[in-house]
Amino acid sequence: MSLESLRGAGRPLIEGVHAREVLDSRGNPTVAVTVATSFGAVEEAMVPSGASTGAFEAVELRDDDGARYQGKGVRKAVAAVNDILGPALEGLDVTNQREVDEKLIALDGSPNKAALGANALLGVSIATARAAAASLNVSLFRFLGGPTASTLPVPMMNVINGGKHAQGGLQFQECMIVPLGAPSVSEAVRYGSETFHALGRLLHDAGQPTLVGDEGGYAPRLDTLDQALQLLCKAIEAAGYKVGTEIAIALDPAATEFFQDGKYYPGAKDKAVTADQMVAVYKDVVARYPVVSIEDGLSEDDWDGWSKLTAALGDKTQIVGDDLFVTNAKRLQRGIDGGIANAILIKPNQIGTLTETLDVVELAHQAGYRCVLSHRSGETGDTTIADLAVATGAGQIKTGSLSRSDRIEKYNRLMAIEEELGEAARYPGRDAFAALSRV
Ligand code: PGA
Ligand code: ZN
Image (cartoon, protein in one colour):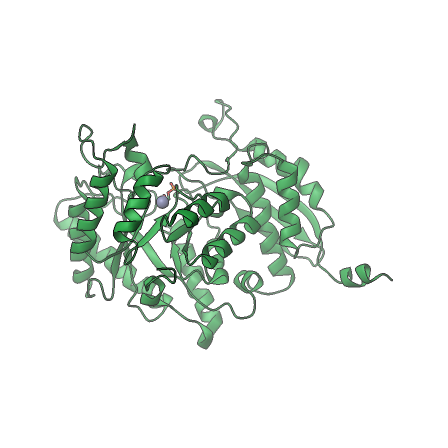
């Protein structure tokens, strides 16, 4: 017997791959992929979908067939898995994620996964990891993160939804609470839930609607960021917590969405604002409120503006690139080289495979950039990002508000991981936002 076949003996192999069309939390089609292995594991992954997508993201393949789901069907991506990607993987070692993902990338062959679809590739990639972990009878975070993975993430909880995720009028997409003073992730979830409900009561008493937006946060009628921040502070206090020390605040303005022809429109439609003025707004906000993190404060290609924003606030505030970096190593490298931002949002479907996602996390960590694992506004019950947050030791996660199962399932998964880790579990709290190593 050759050394190769000795090594191969007893390895779990991919036996079958199957995709189908399912719906996400907005009721739009998405891809579900099941991978079966020779060890009897059968595991499914479901792919999320964004609304405020970055222009530089990998391409999500849609059918464009107006007769079905307003053109949003994903039968082409499903066929790509069932006819091309799946058959090519049969017989491969399911635990060799890099080999699997490289094969997927080669079969697609395009620079941005436009040929077979990042939704097709990511579904297969994640189902492969899930099937590998199940074959080895270990948790996904353990399989991906190794024997020492034990850091739970501090959540940034999006309790006020604006921008493209809600109809309340607030242009700033996400106003989040960050329970960094909690002693554990389970307690962080409790702090968050209690504050979410306190906010609901405040809104109700003010005659505001308590309907929720795409990420399960309230969507009140607000005109200014200041109103939203004041509400958050009141809700934190009403829930019995100390503003700043126990629960801080994070923002994702998703500024690309209100950027046009070189100008920003964060308020009234006729009021244009420059990047310099936007930076001044954030400076003022950080001085007056305990804002520990600002994501996409400026538009996805406004590198000059980002440079000024980082220079103005980057030594004490986390500056996160989402649409700016799109979980893409090349764009992140440009940021690292230019000293732009100090953290990156990690969304696996922005790049299309798990291996590339993990490679970007490593690049970020090597450069002293923090990583925030993230959901999309269109989600499913898939909880992979919770395991990924622990596996990478990222220390932070963004997975929505404290309502709606598509958000809650990730929190429930984090609490299950914490219980599984027992004494070994570590919740970084404030350390997750401590001075960045590169500054
Ligand atoms: P998206 O929003 O999933 O709609 O892109 C999330 C975010 O901007 O962080
Ligand atoms: Zn964002």
